[in-house]
Length: 477
Image (cartoon, rainbow, N blue to C red):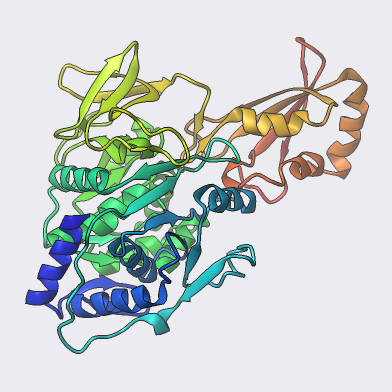
C-alpha cells in the first residue's frame, strides 16, 4: 500500500485541486480528500485495533478505507449481502473494536448495540482551500476479506502490504491503467477486486473515480438503469461487473436501445462462471468485456483477458509474475499475491494456494476453468455457497428425508426435496394454502443470495414423484 499513499501525497503536492473522486452529491479534489482522511483519523481511538467498515459503497467508504489503512490498523469490510447472523459471526471472529458506518446509521445496518460506531456522513467531509500534507504511511496495515461464505461462518482471508502491492501493480499493468481513465464503481467496496481496481489502481495512476452509492445499491437490488445512466453521464472508461450485472446491463441495452459511453474501453467480468453466449451478446452491443479468474485467497485476480483479445472461452492469461500450475487437474497458485492465511488459523508457511478449482491451460496460454473439486456452488453474482449448509437446514425437519441444492452459474440456487411417504398428505395440504411458507421459515437464517428461487418437492424413495415446484414468497426466480 506504500505506492498508493506515495502517489496520493505526490498528486496533492503538485495538483491539489484536481478532482479525483466524484460522488452522488459531492466531489473531492486531492486536497479535500486528504483533509477528510485526516479528520477521520482524529476520530478513530487509539484502542481500536480492528476497524470494520459498513454501509454505502460511495465516496465516504473510500475515505474510511484510506484513513484506517494509513493508521496501520486491521480493516474489515462488511459485505452488504451478509445476513445478520453472518455479520455477527464476522464481528466476533475478527474481534472488531469499532465500526465505521458510511452514509448509514448503526440502526440501519442492524448492528448489535454493543459495538462502538462512527457514523460518517457528508458533514464529515472537509473541503480544504489549500495544500494539506498527508502523513507518512509506516506499513503494517492488514485487511480481512470475508468471502460470501459457503456457510453461515465464512472465513476471513488475511492480506497485508505484500499481497496488495503485488496485485495493484499486476492489475494496473494488465488493464493498461492510465491517468486519463475514468473508473465507474459498479460493485460494493466490500469486494476485494473493487477495492484494488476501483480505488487503489486509480489512485496510483492518478485516474478519476466516479463512485455512486445510489447506483451501486440500485444494481444490487436488481435495477441496473441508474448504473447505465451514470455510465453514459460520466464517459467512464473502465468498470468491473459480475455476470449477474452484465446480464442485466445487456438486457437493459437491448430493451431500451440505450447508448454506451464511447470512451468505455475495459469492462472486467468475473467472480462466477460467465456464459460465452452472454459475453458474445455484450460484445455485439459494444461492451468491451474481458473475462478473468481470481479468488480472495490470491488477492483477487489471477488471470485476465487483455485489451483487444476476444477469445471464445476461458479466463484470459495468467497475470505477469503470478505462478500458476495444474496439479491433478487442480489450479495451484503461488507467489506474492497468496494470502498470509485465514484469520485465527495457522499462517501459510509458503505462499502456495490449492484453489479447489479445476482447470487447464490452452496452447496459447489461456486459462480455462473446468469446475470445482468439491461441491461448492458459485452463483452468477459471484457468491460462493455450500449446498450442505442449505440442505442441513431443511433436513432438520425429519419429514424431509433428502435434499439437494443446485445452481452453479445461475442467478439463484434451486432446491429439490424428498418427503417421507407419510408426510405426502401434509405436503399436498400446504401447497395451495401455505405456499412455501414452511420451507421459507427453515431458511430464515440464510442471506438473500442463498435463498432458493424454486423448491421442488418429491415423494417416495428412489422412484420419486414430482408433486409441484414452489417459488418462495418474495424471491424472484
